[in-house]
Amino acid sequence: MKKSVTLTDANKFPIWRQPIALLFIMTAAMPLSFSVWSALLNNFTIEVIGFDGADIGWLHGIREIPGFLAVGVIAIIIFMHEQTLALVSLLMLGAATTVTACFPHMAGILTITMLSSIGFHYYETINQSLQLQWLKKEEAPRKLGLLIGAGSGAALIAYVLLVLSWKSFNLSYNLVYLIAGAATVLITLYCVFAFPRFVTPHSQIKKMILRKRYWLYYALQFMAGARRQIFVVFAGFMMVEHFGMRVDQITYLYLINLVINMVAAPLMGRAVGRFGERNALLFEYLGLVLVFLAYGGIYFFDWGMVLAAALYVLDHIFFSLALAMKTYFQKIADPEDIAPTAAVAFTINHISAVFLPILLGYVWLYSPAFVFFSAAGFSAVSFGLALLIPRNPKKGLETVFSRLNPRWKTAT
Image (cartoon, rainbow, N blue to C red; front, side):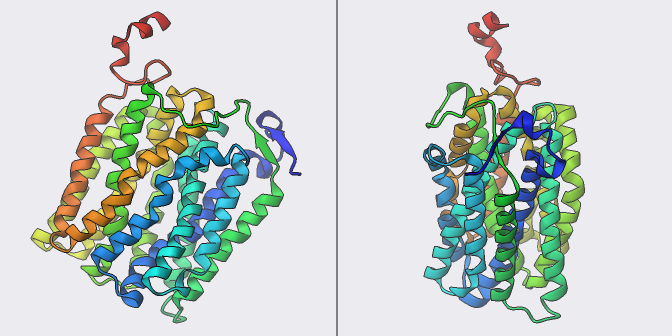
C-alpha cells in the first residue's frame, strides 16, 4: 500500500518529492499528449478522414461529454484517493493518444476521442481540486501562473520537435501520436512510484453540493465553457480550412503562442495577486470581446493569415487570466467544498460544450463569422458577471450583493 503523508510532513521532504513537484510534473505530462493531439487533429481529420465543419462539431461535442459528466468524479473519490484518480486519468489520456491515428474513420476517431477525453477531463477536474487544496491562498495566484507556464513549456518541447521533424523526416500521424502518448504514460508511471500519497487536513465532502452563495462562480464557469468551446473547436479549424495551413505551419503557430504564454502566464498570476480577481477577469473578458469580433471580421474584410495568427496568440494570453476564477473560488469556499465543487463546476463549464460545437458546426457551413460573433456575445455577458465580484472576495462576501444580506452585517 502506498505510504500516506500529511502536507505538513511533506514540506520536510526534498523539493523534488513535495506536492508542488508532483503538480508541476503532472502539469508537464498532460500537454505532451493533449497538445500534440490538438496540433494534429484538424489536419488529420481534414486530410485523412475528410471532415467538414459539421463533422468537427460532432467530434468536439462527443469529446466534451466526459467534461459534462465530470460530476461523476465525486462518486469515484469515495473509493479512490484524488491523487490516485489524477494519475489513472493521465494514464488513460496517454494510452488513448498512442492509438489515435489507428482509427482513420468517423466511428473510430469518435471512440478514441471519447476515451482520451475521459482521461483529460477527469484529470483536469482532480488537478484543479488538488491545486486549491495543496497551495496556500496567499501564494496560489503566483504558483498557478507558474504551473500554467510549466504546462506551456512541456507543450513547447513537443511542438519544437514536431516542427523540426515533421517535414524533415516525413513523419506519420501514427508515429507522432504514439510517441506523444507514450511520453505521458512513462512520466505518469514515474509519479506513481516516486511520490507518496499526500493527505490534506480537510477531508473533502464526497457528495454533490450546490450552494447558493457560489452562484456567481457557477455562472462564470458556464459562460467560460461556452466561449472557450468556440475558440477550441473553430479557431484552429479556421486556420486549416480558410488559410490552408499545414501541420508544421499550425504547429509553428502553437509554438510561438506557447513561448509567449510561458512568459505571460507567470506575469498574469502576479497580476491577479496584485490587482485582484475582479480587475483581472474584467480585463480578460473585454479583450476577448475584441478578439472574437476581429475573428469574425476576417470573413468580411479578408484580413490575412498573419492577423489571424496574432489574434490566436492574444486569445491564449487573455485566457491565461482565467486562473483568477480559481483563486476567486478558493477565497470564498469552505475548504471541504473544494473537491465536490470542482467537479460540479467542471460539469457546469461543459453544459454548453456538449451541444454548442454541434449546433455551431452547422452554422459554420453558412456563416463562420456568426460563430465568432456569438463568442464575442458570450464574453460580453461574462464581463457583466465579473462586475459582480467584490474587490476583496471572501467567505460571506461572495458577490457585491452580499453586503445587502443582513447575515453578512452580523458576521462582520
